[in-house]
Structures are given as structure tokens and as C-alpha cells.
Amino acid sequence: AHHRREEDEEEEEEERVLKLHIIVLTVSCLVGVSLAFEITHEHLLEHTSETMRPIIVGLFGELTLLGFIGLTLFILFKMSWPHELSEYLYGDGEVIPELGESVHMVLFLVMVIFLAQAVYLARLGDRVLNKWKDWEGLSVDRVSERTIRKHKVLQSASLLSLANTSDEQVDSLIFSLTRDRFCVVRDLHPADFEFASYLGIALGRTLEELVEVPVKSWVCLEIVLLLAWQVDGLLGKRDKMVGWILAGYALPLMAGLVLAKLRRILVQHTAPLLADAEQRGQRGSLKAMTNRSIRRRHAQEERSFKKKGAKSPPRSPKRPPEPREKVLVHDTYHHAFWSGPHQKSKFTLDVLRFVPLGAAIYIAILLLVHAPALLKGEVLATYSIYVRLIVLVVALLPPVLCTIYVREAVDDFAIAGHVESLQNLRFVEHVIRRQRTVAAFEALKVVTFLRKPDIVRAAMQLSDQAGKDEREERSWRSIFDVFDENQDGIFDRSELRVLLTKFSTATEGKITEIIELLDDDKSGEISFDEFYAFGRKLERYVRENVDPHELLKEMFEIVDDDRGGLITVHELHQTIREIGQELSIDDVYNLIKDIDDDGNGALDLEEFHLLLHRVGVEFVGKPAH
Image (cartoon, rainbow, N blue to C red; front, side, top):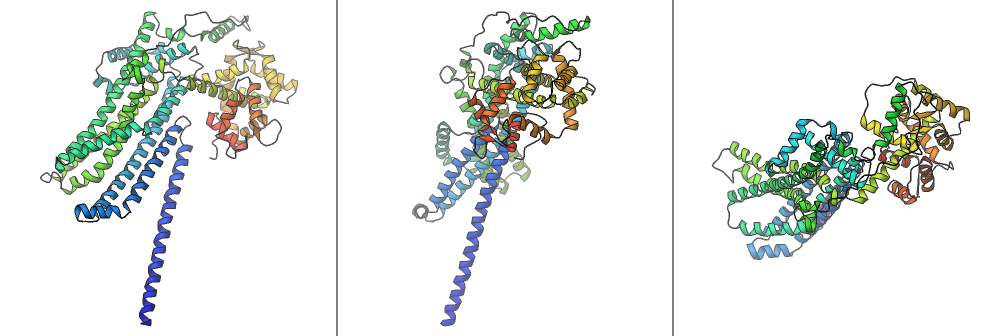
């Protein structure tokens, strides 16, 4: 008996150790999954642009909800009542718990597929934003006659043709017409307002709403579930599979209808704009309606005087733009959307947002239920394996079509859902504030080099590269405008001297030397052409000779007025004001609050680096995190 008791104790000890090992292994797996989740979250946030970041935030919020639902199901089916109920109904206590496990598996797979769709859309969103930025430099008067004819064909095209027609040239024309109309209505300069950035914010918010699952979507899913429950008992396995595949094809049909509707709205919106431009005899006349021509007039005058041998054209006081008739917003524009008079564009977006979630559920059920039955021969058993594989491929097509249609529909919704009566003034203000911030920091970067005559001299000795990039020219134009305090199209020696004196301890002799180097025609004034030529050479010099970290440290020291090793909100606000950009103290605080990791209300060198990287200042390298 004593020997048997010892054996029992040994078995209990072995069982205890085994359980302990299982517990440690299980906990380690949970910790690993949690770490992977957090690392993935941080990686996605780090490698997703600021504009597309809302979709990642919204996605992980929805995943938290789905995870809570999954945990609730797990706890419920681990209780005793499912076994008792299953025993009572089926005579087997494991039927309902096994069904619960299947539901839990489907939910997990839905989460994974939904996550993959959202990440894919976020990545595509960055590409679309870059494409829009490339189109910023396009002018309507450069559009080919062939593209205009295609646009006119789409004006009378059917919904089917609209959904399946994708032409980048026509899309760029629609973008240009919409941009120019938007700037006319808002009384903005198309050359100065980054319409692509405005649409980028709209695209990010649209994607964020797309991955959110509102109450309406849950109600629709419940209705679909109840209908499927009623139909289930009436159909055999083959009919269920066929019905599921047909339901899957309803999803791309829905997405295609939304895409066609949005394209029709955009085509009809831009058709009168193009017709009006053609009627005036110049396709670019819409853009000419803005008061953009002031700065160009001075540049043209200067070039003409240089050709005649004069040093500089006579300067006239800054003239106000010619008065023009106020262009009003189309108050009924949103009526073109489904249920537009009552819900504006919300209902159209609600229809679209149902598609990704529906596609995730469709794939999960297909892979876990119908695909195994099809491959095992439980369905279509009389057909060969090749026929069943073809059926499986056909069944997998709807998610692919959904992805294509949803991607294009989201791009079009970002434009169609945020112009005319659907303009978002908060987005406009955000873009303008960001442009001022970027211009201020880019100007600060240039000032960092202008303080050093040897760098200016070395840059000016470089040969000028052939060809001009419109985005690059627009960027240097914004920096030039910062230096051109009175906005008369040039900045004279006194304006540059004041700016250099604020941020430099250079002697008067060095400042004069710098001005002489920039003033190529010795007119006493620096035109944009002279400044832009210097800027292009400076960019080449910086790329080839300047250490990004040293540039970062110098910019940091300029802003850190008290040399305390930290940039306070007040110091940053003061620097931006001295450069000539008007941002409130609240704007500056909002600029740094998400970057100030330690919450001390100031930026150290690493946080300042992250700020410059986020606003898009070039040649400062990539931050460590």
C-alpha cells in the first residue's frame, strides 16, 4: 500500500508538472500573440503616412470589438449549459460546443481577412495620394483632344460602362477640373493650395469609416443571417454552396454600382466646367479665373526687361486682383447621391462599407465550410476534381472583384464626397496650416545654409540641370513667398538682410557677400528665377555634401533660442512667426502634442527630427522611430 501510494504521488506530481508546462506554454503563446499584435500595430502606424493613419486606428478599434466578441463566445461555450442543452436537444453533449468552436473559428478568420483588406487599402491609399500629387502640376489647357472626347463619351455612358471604364488620362482631367473649380469657390490659388493633400485627408477619413462597423451594418448582417437560417433547411449541400457563391457575386455587383454612381457624379459635375472652358476658347480658362496671374505678371515683366538689356523692370506697388464675379457653391450638388437630399453622401458610403465586411465573411465561410466539402467530393461528387477546382476558382473571384471595385470607389468618393456642398472646411484649414508649417521649416532649412557664404558659393558654382519639375518649382515658390515679405514678386536686399540677421550672427560683410552671390544680374533685387536657380543647385549640393544629422542639429539650434536642449512651444511659435508664417500658439501645440512622447511640452532633438520627417522636410534623414 505504501508503494502504491508513492506511485500515485509520483503520477500526481507528473500530472501537475505537465499541467504547469501546458499553462506556461499557453500563457507564453498568449504573450507572444499580444506582442505580435502590438508590434504589428506600431509597425503599421510607423510605415503608414499621416494621412492614411486614421484607417489603422479605426481598424484596430474594430478588431478590439471583434476580439471581445470572440472572447465572450469562448467563455459562453466553456460553461456547462451548452453541453446540457446539446444533450437535451441532440442526445450528444458536444454538438453545440463544437458549433461554437466553428463560429469562433469563422470569427477569427473574418478578423484576419478584414485586417488584410484594410492594410491593403491603406497601402493603396498612399499610392493614390502620390498620384494626386503628381497631377497637381497638370493644367487643363494641356489636355489632349482625345482625352476630352473620352470624357464626353462617359457623359452619356451606362452604369455598366462607367463601372468598367478606367482611364488615367480622364481621371487626371476630372481631378484638374475639380481642383480648379474648388479653388475658385474657396477663392484660393490653385498653384498655392495643395488640393491633393485635401483629398488625401478625405481619403484617409473615408477609409477609416470604411473599416468601422456601425450599428446599421450589424443590423443588416443580422437580417441576412436570419434569412440564411430560414433558407438553410430548404436546400441541400449543393444548393447551399451555389446560393453562397451567388450571394458572394452580389457583393462586387453592389460595389460596382457604387463605383458607377460616383463616376457618373464626377463626370456630370465636370462636364459643364469643361464645356464652359471650351466655350471661352481656352481649356485652361477656368484656372485663369483665379487671381493667380499677379506673380506671373512680375516674372514675365522681368524676363522681358532682361532680354532688352535692362537690369530690372520698374516696380509698381502691389495691385489688387481684378474684381471678378463671386462663384458660389452648388447647394444641390449632394442631391446626386442616393438619398442625397436627406443623407447627403452618407447612404452611398454605408452601401460601400458593407462590402469589405461582407467579403470577409464570404471568404471565411467559403474556406471553412464549402471549399472542404467541394474538395472532398461531398458536393458535386459525380464531377472530376478538375471541374471542382474550376468551381472553387469561380467561387474565389467575388472577393477579388470586390477589392478592385472598392479601391476605385473609395478614390472617387474621396473626390465626389468632399466638393461643392460637401466641402469640409476643417480639412481646408488643416491643409493651409500644414502648408504654412512646411513652408516655415523649409525656409528655416534654407536659412541654415544662407548663413554660410562658403556653402552658397559652392552651390552657385554647380551647373544648372536641364528640365524643371513643377512640384519642385511649387515647393521653392512657397519658400520664396516666405522671404518675399510684401509679396511683390521679388525680395530686395533689405528683406534678406532682415531675415539673415534674425537667425544668424554673421557680420554685415558676410551678409552682403551672400546677397551678392544670389543677385545674379546685380539688379539689387532677387527674383524668383534667381532664387529658384540657387535652390536647385543647393539641393544638389546638400544631397552630395551635407550630413543630414548635422543639418538637423543646426536647425534645432536655431529654434532652441535659450540653448536649453529642448524646443518649447513658445520657441517654435516664435521662430515660425519670425520666418513670416502666421500660426496660432494652439496650432503649434497641436503640431507637437502627438510627437512629444515624454509629455513635457517640449521637443528634444529626436522628437524634432520626427516632426520634420512628418511634415515632409527633405534632407534631414529618417528618424529612428
